[in-house]
Amino acid sequence: MLLNQDLKQADTYQQITKKIINLLTKITDDNQLAHYLQKCAEIISKGDFRLTKMLAENLLNQVVNDWGKRLSQDESLTMPLLIRKKLKPNKQYRKQTTSSKSNPSKSTFAAVARTLLEEAEAQLLQIYLHCPEYRQDVREAIEARDVQFSLSHHRFLWHQILNAEILHKMSLQIAPSELILKLQDSFIEYPNQLNQISHLFHLNELSEKQVCRPPLAIRSALACIEQIISMKRRRIALNMWEKTDAASSREQAEEYHQQFRAEQEWIEELERLRQVNFYDLTALPWTGNF
Image (cartoon, rainbow, N blue to C red; front, side, top):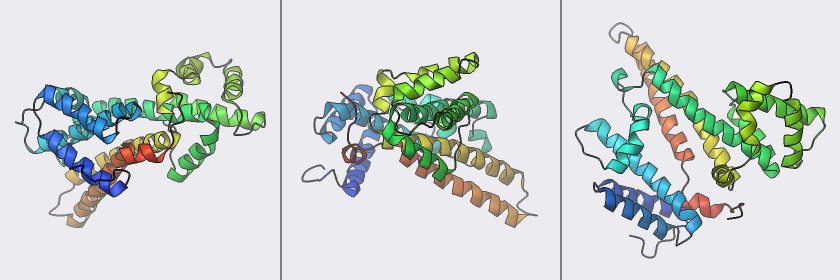
């Protein structure tokens, strides 16, 4: 399958990855699945240990997605424990169906959405705080995609950043330590908000890895935020479609169904943008120290 294949070519990589995912999805033994996930990641990464773990996680996520689609068609299938553990928390919001019974409750969706938004928005803010050379990229991406910080503490921090830059006439290239010092001073009067966002002023092992390739992190975070927004629009379209009497309001029912399908397709495209593949990793430099 991999003989004489140039995995640096995007089309080739996608074709090979798709074949690998199809094979991995057929494995039902946990030990074998874990072994071949690692093995495939090692082969694709050509032994680069920095890429192997990320690729293994990416392959597993795609296998989980495939299992989710299979289960939506046949819930009697027996999946590996490794897949069950990954799929269970995400099953409610990832399952693709037009039945309201298969869609998550509002409370479940809200909880999942908040978790995803917390992670995505925090990632954007940490890139802005700790990667001066990508601050303009973050600004432009947010404006171009017309998104805002949904969580109040993140929105407050973003406003404080913009205000500090104007007040102190700071360049976008100001050192992270100087920017963070100014922000800490501005938060003296807001101790509650500071407690919610102070962890963003520091990078731990995980967050440091996440900002090693800022362009990919920015793309993934924004796609995640947009995905949550699109899921809300999809839910509204689905609810309206189910409430519409197709017999008496056929055109309106078709319009709601088309809106639902359009949002579903956009969600799938955003999911693709959230994923990081080997081509992405090799196309961008590693900015970390490990």
